[in-house]
Image (cartoon, rainbow, N blue to C red; front, side, top):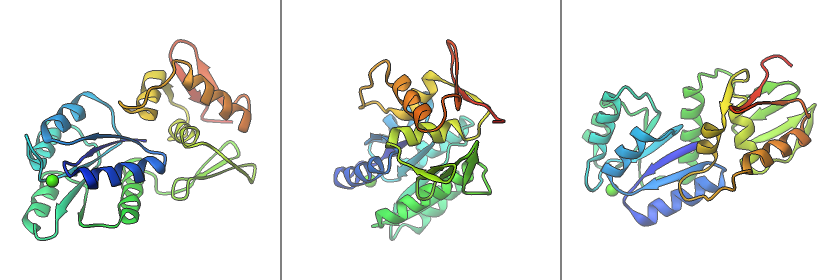
Length: 220
Ligand code: CA
């Protein structure tokens, strides 16, 4: 899960960045509207958290231009308590949800999970496939009813491959989802995570599509 955080308040941004990174999200953080729009139009994200009062380009304008470009990326806006009109304008401009500052980080996390579930179009919260049960709410994973301990990256990778199974995920897309701009990744890092997942589940869970990427077969 790769998120873009757009927040010019450094203390708040750091708090959010830390809390979400600890949850296993890949978080890229920009501090002004122009950089946000550039990132949103040129990179792949699963969701964006957008402050409205931003230098260089107003958050509402970022949102409008993104929607004009045809993007349906889930957007959560952050607004000040007394700015009712901003919230309405934000929702009208295509925001999916909003939070009023100051907010509790646990509420932010819950809203993100709900938005991500909705955008994945899953009525059921639990992902079940080939003996694996993955609960996105608690990030607990089991295999044939035994709990499996995964690192945050392994969890993310498994989640992406299972959402839903049957799609070939390219190496590039997986690397973008697992690592942001600030995280240096070794060239073989994806192979290492895949290797660990195969060991923890089964050796034929994840198929290598040579020269392209990886696939969890739809039927197993
Ligand atoms: Ca601000």
